[in-house]
Length: 242
Length: 390
Figure 1 (cartoon, each protein chain N blue to C red):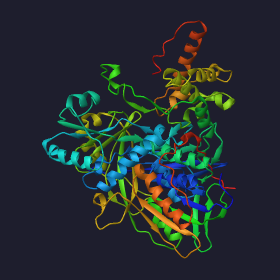
Figure 2 (cartoon, rainbow over the protein chains, first blue to last red):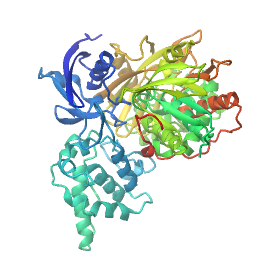
Figure 3 (cartoon, one colour):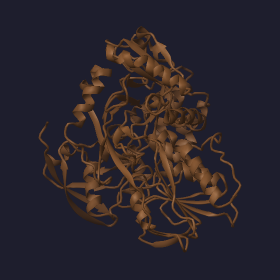
Figure 4 (tube, rainbow over the protein chains, first blue to last red):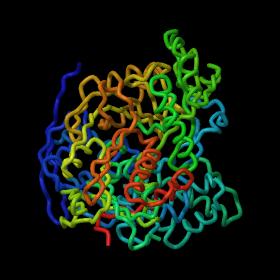
């Protein structure tokens, strides 16, 4: 049996207009969400959202030392290394409800508008690909867990909330790659309008923070190529987006 | 639309059970308010292994639960396809000992109405390239995978469409059955209000004992925790089960690009504080390795534990049935009070139907359950408000 070791963490949590410090002790193999839950037991007024504890529900997004993360998969050992207090703030670019809880409704509305079905065709799961058709019968959830980390990290959304933002544009690209009976035209025109893909300044923050392999920045770049190719009457490859 | 005179029901808890109940009762035309102390699915439902049961796992030891699972499994496929990965499951034999269980297992599934299909090993290994090459038998059954959070949101979105009010971050402070109200404090605005109720439903999972206490009644349950390990790669298309009687750690559930391995089972005192016991992760890895030897090569993504609420029987742990139980606590008081505990996410809709029938009887209203065929609204349409209903 392995030795059970705890790490001490100082959480500095932004609570609306003020900051509050919590001192917690968590098993060294634990995650930031365990630390937050421990703080929540000390102080039941501390509000944060969580559900699945394995990066599937997308409800525990927050800023950790200024960086967007999911609390449930951020190892505490990584945060304890510096010995400094861990700064926790709610996601940016969404209306604040209280403490670490924001309202993600605008993101979900955008997904509904684009119409990305949550289920996709599964790609072969093994690295030694023999025949891509082998997996044709299987399906799985889209990678995007709709957590909002990419939207929070995007400097363009911060300066202009009218911008479609990385999550929506990545969803549009997925729909163009795999239309599943939906007219890709809606996604394409949504992506190509004046608040769409041309406003991205290639900061690539969205792809940096995505906890679920979506690569929204890559999707935006591919969308641009695809739209341009269409303008010049050429066919662009959708490869790389599938 | 809901009439002004519609009976008022307050449901406590936004796990799978509470959300399914809110949906069922809203569809019957009742005025439903669901209150949840934190976020949706922040308790037992949120961190479960995400397996849509076919019932095969229970067919031998608990045929009643198995039948319930396959029935609900079929219904969920119809009403909430967008929150399910429907790739079936395999029960896999690796050694002769597993083969002894095989015919027993197939017969039991058949008796419960669960379709089975023997898949030739060569085919199984082609479908599941990471499967243990020592596999000697594979039986396909209609298991699936869900997204527990979206599962709850789908019910809530539909309930809201039918007039239900959902209030998150709302702590129940008191329940007065004689006067007929539930005292609720918003954890956001700190405001306290009494919500009038003709019926109060306690769907608080392992916290149901505490909620019942507020109404001055007793609910006995066992909080049984389980550890689950998520690894950062999807190593199978289907849900993989070892062809053995239900035990610890014998399931791998793929979800998106991850695999969830689990689970264990032990009794806990406090469902709010469940440290991962030493050795559990290793135990789970050791058994999962029998199904997919490569699991250890993949980095861990997360480790979680949650408590299931089990109905107390003489036996404990896995010996106890995973069936649900409904208790009606009041008959003379002004407001009715029901507790519902146990069961599985897969059977939440069925549990809600049984409970809602009892609620309808208590309120003497003629309303049939319609949730078997009502397609649910998109989970994205759920509005997660923290404000008091108007």
